[in-house]
Length: 160
Image 1: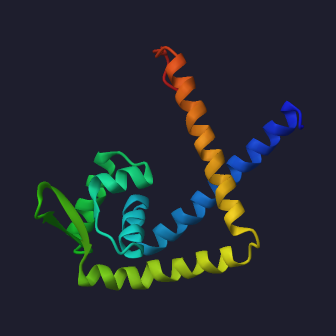
Image 2: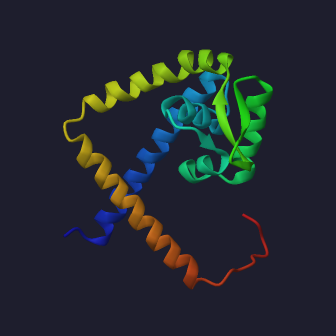
């Protein structure tokens, strides 16, 4: 078993890799002229054949309702998406790509899908990679929730 120092080094390396991956997607979003949130909405709506609602995107991408709502409004203003009421539920709206949105998705999302496929195809143990990563994230989430429950909220005099 590795000692604490070795584990700390591995965690830092892993966190740096996560940050680098995030940076890659930020660059891709920027190259498409979209915000990160708008990019992930377009990516999700294009790649899934099911219909999404705002609350689905909040859960999938861990964004607040306000962040998703703001990005949806901007995408709608740019005629990339349209929001339609769901007949059986007048409260929720489904997110659909417009004809222009389909064009944008074809130009920006489809090539990104190919980049991802090509990159992942070069890894022999794809399923193992994903399963290990998923397990780590689930454990981090559990540990974080426990930590937060145990802590009393503190107010600091100085904002960092």
